[in-house]
Image 1 (cartoon, rainbow, N blue to C red):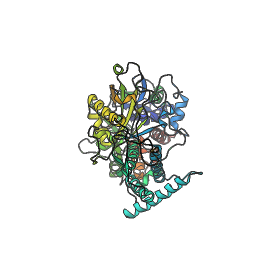
Image 2: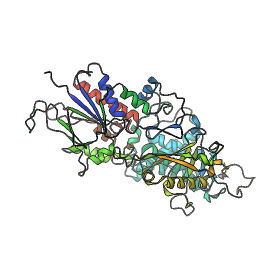
Image 3: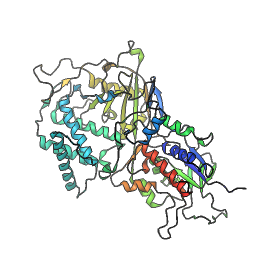
Image 4: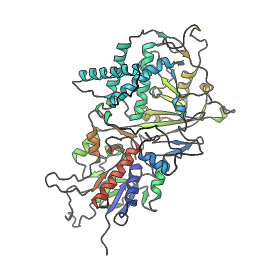
Amino acid sequence: MGAKKPRVVIIGAGMAGLTAAHRLYTCAGSRDLLELCVVEGGTRIGGRINTSEFGGDRIEMGATWIHGIGGSPVHQFAQQIHALDSDQPWECMDGFLDVSKTVAEGGLEVSPCVVEPISTLFKLLMDFAQGKHLEDGASSEERELHNLAAEAFKVCKSNNGGKVLSIGSFLRQGLETYRDVVKDRDEEVQGGHGNWRRRSLKEAIFAMHENTQRTYTSAGDLSILDFSAESEYRMFPGEEITIARGYSSIIESLASVLPDGLIQVGRKVRRIEWHPEVHQGMILGNGHSNDRPVKLHFCDDSVMSADHVIVTVSLGVLKAGISEDLGLFSPPLPTFKTQAISRLGFGVVNKLFLQLDPAHDPKGNCFDNFPVLQMAFHRSDSELRHEEIPWWMRRTASLCPIYHNSKVLLSWFAGEEALQLETLTDEEIIEGVSSTINCLLSQPEEPQVKSSTPELCNGNVNSVQRFVGSDMKFGKVLKSRWGTDPLFLGSYSYVAVGSSGDDLDTMAEPLPRESRETGTLPELQILFAGEATHRTHYSTTHGAYLSGIREANRLLQHYDCV
């Protein structure tokens, strides 16, 4: 009999797991050397990538964007399989989302003269936090705001013992510094039913951008998002685009080269049993040689042994798995690994899609004029807030068609609001969104802005024009539920205050750890991949892709295949 092939089991058939499997299976020479298996706890492949259809349009329930096309491996792969073109309409298929309309609570359409300075301020504050330099040809206003960001940074450091703790505190200090410099009058802003003052309106616009940033990062509160790590995060250059044939086309292509039966769905792992002190040639306590030192115990009570296991489950599942109650690993992971898992952040971001009820739109033109709606709300403690707007809508930054004239609207939710969304019935969601739209897009009985008032550059606003969609009726609702799905328990990772990029590197370290005393090479019993294991591209699909390649290459190098 020939020697057994080393068995590699990959837990999770998402982007990281399938990329690792694809790399191991297609690498020259490895197919005859390694026995490969992918086990997936759910009933489908893709993980946090899940392309679906709604209202006749192709949509993404999970991962949506290719974040920069310049050098992105996901973009290159999508090009190779011709996934960037489709005859079927898809989410964000045009540049429509670049044109937005900002409306404040009560029906006040806010002029670009008011919105753009705050938007530019927020962008330059984030650019400063991310370590970006001003581009050549920057305007004098941009240079002034960049200097303002530097001043806010100094104040933050002074207030926090020499360290800027969070993105949230830095942004708020930036807003305060801006107010001190601008010193505009805090006069009443007229129009609609808003009862706004200039100062509170600008703060609401700033908060709107903060809420968008929450969905970018998955941090429910920007005050827990670490400032120092922000400058380590990297984006690929170029535009951000969606995939015409759907993100799942990438997953399907990765899986298509693998033979039938290599991916096993419905195989949820209950416990990973490993041997942190075992080295090649040792005999285990049960008298058997350690040629398969790792055992996977599944929820159906079956057991599979392996030489190497690549764990690609989400950080949320790892956080739950290191608790004493669940105990995913036996023995428990070493302290250095559990501390990194505990310190890093893992948040919830959900998407909400709503489709117009055709019975209330016989001519099919109800959304023809519906804008890319950016929503500015009164503070939660303000006596001026409209009670009909539910609390879970108040930290939602936008509501818009998924492309120009689409009959489907999309909104993003993060943090507590995202979790609340998962608990609501379709009827509760429709009522809450409809109430919000009516409050924002309804027109007052008598315009309150005098015709002699110049448009908005003096701080005033006009009542928003009457959109047909302001009295719309929704027929269908579709929402993601990443927070309560036991296979994910959240959406993607972020570097929380108290954590650092070092923790992301620690996440990627295989087990057992190499002995510093003896220099013994690790057995690579347990390897880790996934977006939360990449120091500079965490939270992204390309980060997951790169981590899958990394761990596959680690094994290939271990067996001298590379």
